[in-house]
Length: 194
Ligand SMILES: [Zn+2]
Image (cartoon, rainbow, N blue to C red):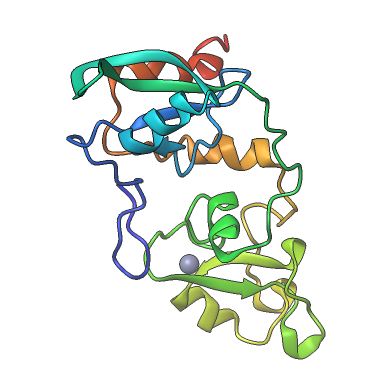
């Protein structure tokens, strides 16, 4: 388990008693891997009745209304394909995700913050290819120096990641709970790799 600077676990928290439904796109891939796309059972049922989703798999748990009885969906798929955005937003979270929540100088996962490779005081911008995850001690040590001046080089040069890249990294941090019926849709593409 990975712990962020404010002490929260990075594993997406999934209640194992709430019958959440895994939400797949129309191509049967999860809408999002990290955080994993999950709906409450109430939202999943609503979407079924609005005919926005198909039920792919079900829990054994039954719900009743005066006129109907149905099993709660454990996996649903959208009827209309949602095109994933190609350029992920430049956010704090996504930079951490690109860098796998580890300091790009020493690998530490504690006390994470950001470093501008070319410091802002030297004209560096806050953009994908100038910002890396760095622990506070490394950040402090590097100060207002360039990587060459500080003799500190990031383990990978920062870049603008694709959504697929972030998805791939997100799968390194699986939720604390995965229902059996979800597994077929979560890891098949990695398991098929030779
Ligand atoms: Zn560090």
